[in-house]
Length: 94
Ligand SMILES: [Zn+2]
Image 1 (cartoon, rainbow, N blue to C red):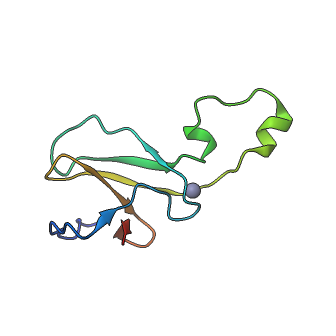
Image 2: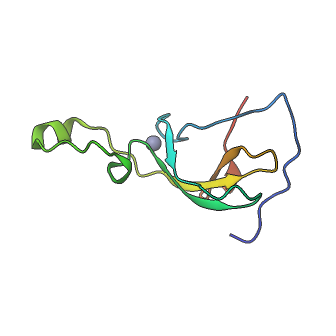
């Protein structure tokens, strides 16, 4: 990724924190509070991001699995936006 597109503050827009593929909550870890800091964001349905991984095989197979991966980006206001590296866009809910 070269550089992030300029983002204007627009109160009409609602930033999405949901996976663009399946609509699950996005899980991420971004401790850096500096503007422009990034980390990997994953769909909460991704097995790698699930903490309570069921030991039982049949329970595991019932779990939905989603491969979406993007970026969590710290914004000027201290909030976190999610960036879809495939579409090259920030996730926005209108
Ligand atoms: Zn997903």
